Amino acid sequence: MFLSRSEGLALALPAALFTFLVFLVPVGILLSVAFQTDTGAWSLQGYVDFFAQPLNQKVFFRTLKLGILVAGTAAVIGYLAAFCIVNLPATSRGRIFGLVVLPLMISPVARTYAWIVILGRTGIVNDVIVGLGLSSTPIRLLFTETAVFIGLLQLFLPLMIISLVSAMENIPRDVVPAARVLGASWFQVFFRIILPLTKEGLVIGGTLVFTGALTAYITPAILGGSKVLMLETLLYQKVNVSNDFVSASVIAMILIVMCFSANLALKRIASVKR
Amino acid sequence: MSRLMIWLILGVTLTFLIGPFLIVIFAGMSAGEALAFPPQGLSLKWYAKVFTVESFRASFALSMFLAIFGTLAALLIGIPAAYALNRYDIPGAETIRTIVAAPIIVPGIIVGLALLRYFVVPLNVAITVALFVTHTALVLPYAVRVVSSSLNNLRADMEEAAVILGCTRLQAFTKVVLPNIRGGILAAFILGFVTSFNEVPASLFLSGPGVRTLPIDMLSYMEITFDPSVAALSALLAFMSVAIVFIAERLLGFSRYV
Image (cartoon, rainbow over all chains, first blue to last red; front, side, top):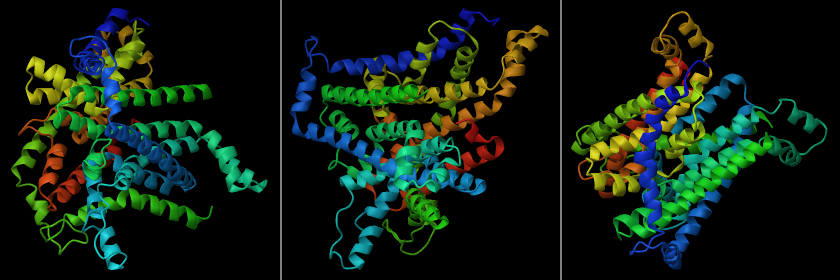
């Protein structure tokens, strides 16, 4: 075109420099902390020490487990819901889709807070349990892995549904009925038609939900507390309770590596398809 | 699949997604002192109370300030960047794109800690300024992305025509490009506003005594007091977000841009 490159660079540089200086540099320094000893020599001792502690190991595997569980469950519900949504008539489809997106605009604090009302000692679930005589005293539902799982699932399910709906909208309308007429079971329809044609949407949704669950702070903080620590809440404790910046840096690195590998895997799978 | 099955599945899914929220709205209407559902009698006293809590008012003002001006600052540097990346053949365009998008991928809590330790403390930056800078950085990727996609839909020949017909380059931008991407800019502003207003992890370490964003203030209030005011406040904030997005959708078809 008729525009010069230096002009373009001048327009793009403020944003790039800003992010680089106030964001990438501090994050880079933070990540390097765990690779250095007190004397400044490079070493992996910070990582060795971190994983030597059983609590840290437990939190690491719990975070990984919850991330996978939440993403897997979201995929199952997401497929059911997305299939229903794309088969709705156009007007109700828009409305239902709007209701699915709606929670994303609401503060995660508010959304997580709801589960305290539901799962707390005097919450609805316990009222029902005690009312039905299933237990004489309220049982502890909050501050359990189940509570964190439910909270995370509710927080991130919309992202999965959105990804799967847009993937399914690209499947030609007659394909599924055609397969059914020709004798395919629903099982075959899903694994041989729907799944291969929506793989990309599943990968995108899965990455969003998985990384979202790994890096959520509010949900494990409110619903898990110090009883059910995840990496994010553990990092907060390491800094604010024990002043252990090396461990904080190790956790930061673990989280970033997990998120980046999930994103890389996404890019690879998505580009192989095209 | 039958009609009934479809509505059953959607009913259960939507109840799971939205039901808890309706419960919060009602829990906030309690006439009693403790958080419970069903509420002990109905009243709006907790909805009224949140307006009188001094810390909520202060943190609401701070959150509003950050959401509005942080997003405006992000647009101020983000629009030129999006324009340059779209219209110019810049060396290192891919690198610039990656740098600007990075804050989305890095978990917020790490951003907060890194900025606290290696930006705020060594340079002795005021808390409000630190929060402002952080929110600007977090919103910038969204601003660039949304404005970019709106620029993609605008053909470059229109600006060329304007320049050939005698406009200066700046005039071509302000008279031709800007009016055409107005919707995208507004959509970017709303998305940035909501993102910044709801942000917690990055602001966590940066919030000091007396200087807190509203969601963080709610979190610490919850730890101390167990009354329904946080439920009422949650409901009010949800109404605010939903209203903003609803109006935006009606006015400009917000969802096209996001």
